[in-house]
Image (cartoon, rainbow, N blue to C red; front, top):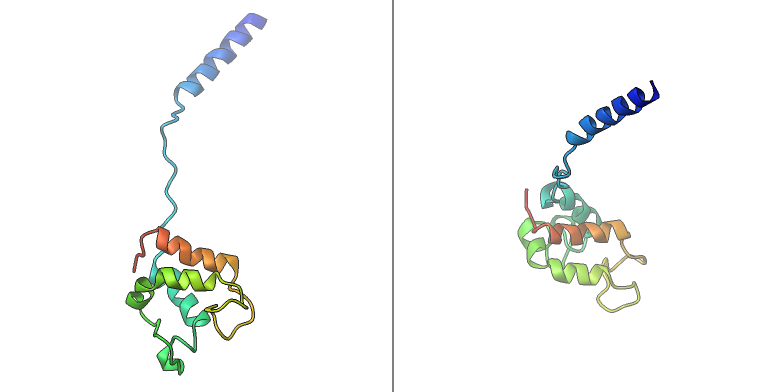
Length: 115
């Protein structure tokens, strides 16, 4: 009886393992895009200086094209410390959060998608 139980258990385990596949791929994380991931952050964090309609007098960052063109410089400057020359956001006394900075970096890594 004990042997029959062990044999049945092993057969069941073999059947389960035979249907397992190690070749299944995990779904890739969706890539970030400007419209859904970055536009609102830029409007909030870069205003009013870089948003002309809010009285900004610096280079405008109110479009996908302008952000895409300057992404390396934007990332460089938002990573600076508040007392470093060129720190952005200029009028703030603290850096953007690490998650916000990571958002800009991930958007660049994902290929600077617009939509």
